[in-house]
Image 1 (cartoon, rainbow, N blue to C red):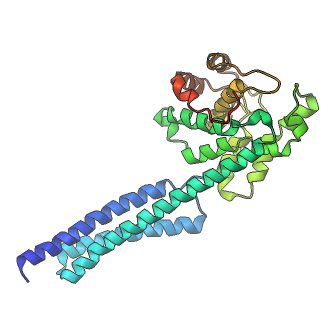
Image 2 (image 1 turned 90 degrees about the vertical axis):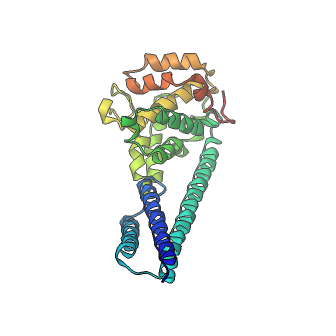
Image 3 (image 1 turned 45 degrees about the vertical axis):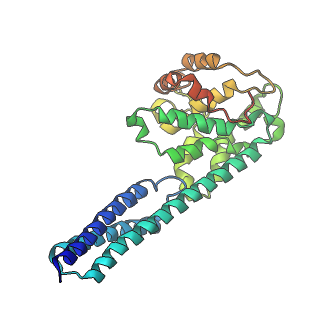
Length: 300
């Protein structure tokens, strides 16, 4: 066999090995993001994903062994190069399908939340606004805090934080005046209702405490009496976003407050109702970014 032909075969195998290495990196990164409430699976699916990664590494070793110790012909070189291309194509299809599923799931969730909020004219666009504010605050967190949070999971928790209001009578939701003691007791139960509604979805277990405790206060005077470090970080973030939305929202029984007024209230309540560090981060976000979070159908 000519030297030139052997060189071409060697280059084909090396190219295939490099592409397979890139496939492994992409797949490993993909797996690292499969821990959110939408992508996470059961133990069996997690095991299969890990086996897939091990097989890709095994194939890469096969490429290197063949290139160093083997005596491959054109057929073998073509199969090895084509195999790596095939894996790259399959991974692209899988990544695209996963993105489609996540996007469609989010769209359906937003539609369902919109239907829930339609029961209460005071809440039009509120949950999407809270979701947008939550993700904005997440984006501005220092890396040490951001690394502890799954952005997809907290997005769904923020979007569904008021899901439990389905269990609250419309007469209470739409009451144009302040609630009495018994009505307020029913209203305060909505986080627990929301958790019960999400209970059948096993992968949502991780976000249930964030939803249940999003009305907790740093001083322990919230719905369930948790305080300071007892409150999940994600719940504290949603609490800040939820409160800012509520403050700037026009309701039947109150007028909307301005951005500056809302910021002053957050500062005044830092350390008692809200986490001080999170308030400091939120108020440092450029005003334009905060105001850009307002959904088109939000009542302001």
